[in-house]
Length: 289
Image 1 (cartoon, rainbow, N blue to C red):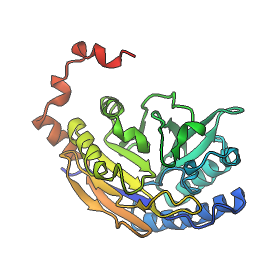
Image 2: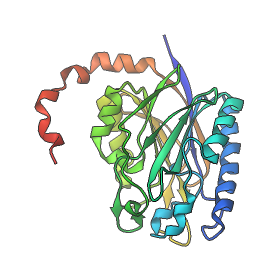
Image 3: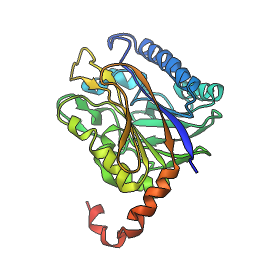
């Protein structure tokens, strides 16, 4: 018997110049995404995931302390609270990536998870932090996450979150599967060039290796004044067999909606007994410094 869950991914270009006041940037982007979330809810979506730090540009293209003021508390900050109310009104669960402050000078790249009643369930903090040229200076802004790989039970689905650069590391992807994730959302900000060929390679591999669905998101457009490259959209859903079955456009705002039959997870895992046949007793060297 099918166990369908309708999910939506929102990819969007930045709608306000980076030189604008931070509060204006944030409000414009929140307003834009609220409208798109409502669109997804009207289409029957049960879970909606937004892109990495959805309420602004990808500011890690420069190293400036100005952006530290873009941070918020989670869950007590205004954006998470707005999204909790919206989730309750729209009867949709939300994955909301924000820039979190957890104390003076302590910042994380975080995704809040909210259920369809508006209840805050918890958060995931990005584990792997890049610092690579050109324009991905994330260690200037974020501490590595310290909450492990939580899985959130929505009642009708169990979901995990992996953020952008995390997708290059199979260890956390496996941990999410072992922790019970049925759908793993990966909100990202990635540009054409060096890693684009990996976009459709790594995450389908994670889906197949762990027998769960992947929902991968990327923003669209170029962002001045940095212009580090084209954020090429192409958000997609991938099934537990590693097959991409729904994909967004490369160059436009889009609410991508798909139905995920979670019964496929059991079918695939009964065929490929990867969890049964793993050998954790042989993997000790993998976690040595």
